Length: 306
Image 1 (cartoon, rainbow, N blue to C red):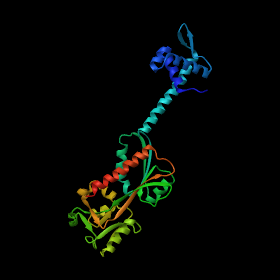
Image 2: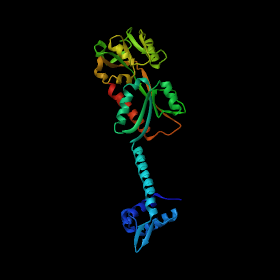
Image 3: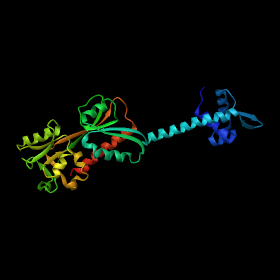
Image 4: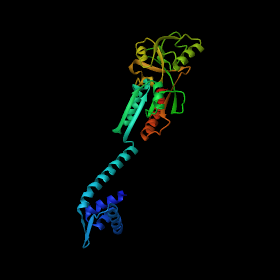
């Protein structure tokens, strides 16, 4: 049996109106085409749906039963069409995001929340993981999108890299806050908080002091930059941190929370990347969220850097 949606729609309209001509007007088809559609449907299912007497159509008992089946199919089709339309319009679906710790507390929830504001039917997962773990999750196709410190390229991952500038954090009452650019000379012998010794920002920072002949004094060793802001606020140290951590202070340039951020020379880089699986196509939701995330990274740079 090879029924078509057009046959079912035509049958439903003929039964509803009780007239071939009226059904034709409603459907925008000629009377002969509607008659042919009904005749083809009856031939396909093997029994008559209407008795034709004196120019009138009388539905058979089987027609009323068949209408229930036709209505169920057409209702399901309408539901499926609406669902597909919602998917196309980014109104329905699922988004799984893995994010490294620096961005998971403020920046990523802010971006994701804005993205989902007008999409109530989209379900989202946001998991904080280390950059190395996220890389493996994306490579094994377990998450739709990852946001990490930039990894080495690999064939199983598509990545878009962003080179972000690190800033120097200090109490807003510090005399150095009057300067727009902080140098190793300004921090010569001063207490610093840094990440662990293997991290690229630590290696760049320690090299900057060594290359300029200034004393590098690490008082606090951290796994992530965010806890270091509490030490800075207490006046215990300076912190040369990534742009996303600075953004997490909500309004860093105006000293929110008693901390201000200033540019640092020589430039310390903190590169981040948007990762997506390479072995399956990204959903429309993932593509659009990835675009927004990239746009917001650029906006963050423009808003924070003088």
